Length: 480
Ligand code: BES
Ligand code: MN
Ligand code: ZN
Image (cartoon, rainbow, N blue to C red; front, side, top):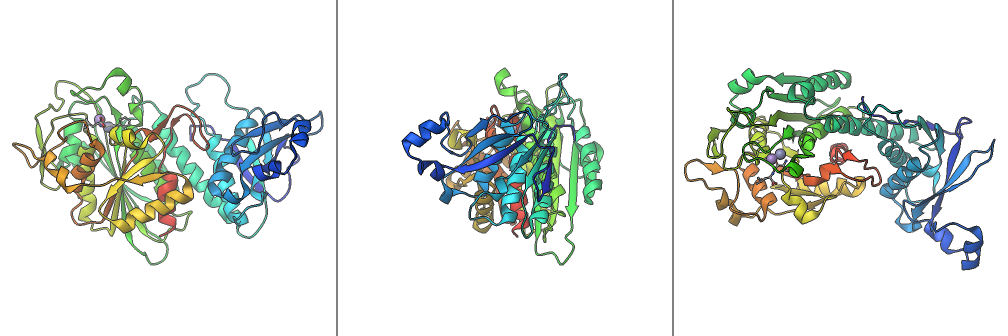
């Protein structure tokens, strides 16, 4: 791991080394105080709202205490505990070792659920991408969750697996595109596959050509970095309940190609391999979460660059499934590499396929930067994602795949063109394009859009790559 994160521990007792601990406060508790009491308590605006904190000074040999707002008691859930833990860990960043009693806050959750949520909140919010900063890393080294109860240790360990997977994905996303090349991504994938007991296969450019991944080759044409294609396999310990394929867009940098982006549009485009990083992250959690389904991952990797060999608007390539595609905009490149990956995944006849990608800006015009769009052919799979979103707080909203828009993808000279006819409904047209490559396999596409990147901290989100989707997909897999 190259990012920084405080080490999170679990203990039944308050650790002696901690120089700070928290006092969880629901907003109802403060509502019960009379206005006079509230004034005399001098809570400086602290109302127990979710995410609010108030640091109470300690003394030479007394740890400081931090009031941590939980919001209304009857709205308490795992998501509010995660947010409260995140707010707490940010308020004690100047300490080396802190304790956290949040998991013992009263609420409808079991101790195990509460410990899991708090471990995720503390770990994820303390993450920072640090290898390129010369000044000292954050001070906070250790946060100890004080809790006991049935199943808390197992829940803690599972949360740790998820946090580590998110960190891995954030590290991959945050590393600059100039060094996080397809070859570098594949090397990291080999390393983590070995650690997590996953089978891995990495195809180089020659194999990619032999396997007829025409979309990956087309996008890679203008690059000096060769492409890679990764396949990972997880096989459950017992009898497998189902066969799932995960596909992640792995564009290590998206300049737009000859249909070049603006300089501001290109600024964050190292995040364009978030889908691939998320899929790799999820794969590392499956054994720890005792997932009962077989999962295969497909990650096409290339950057989208420009040189004299770059693919041109008007060029046509043949995708893995035999369909020809006229590329009228080289910036609609994600769908081209996904076309190959989905075709290939469908050949293994999985029960379902899920792809995740920073596919369009358009999805964020509809849903903003904190909700991902989901589009697909399976109502049941959509429901699984919606249920997992409710538990993890990684929000999704279903968008349609309107048949009447399909003709926008008709090309004059090929089977398909890669863009629609105008600026509207871009996320839907992109979804319709992908649908041409999923054969008969029930499928859902997750378009992360701008939610892959954050310009401000917010709960478990840290600045930069969010790696949104790791917790969502891990939840889908563990609930199967
Ligand atoms: N990677 C981008 C989409 C994107 C943009 C993700 C901003 C996150 C933030 C994708 O490859 C792209 O350029 N899409 C185009 C498609 C268009 C040319 C049809 C878009 O959305 O503008
Ligand atoms: Mn693009
Ligand atoms: Zn892209």
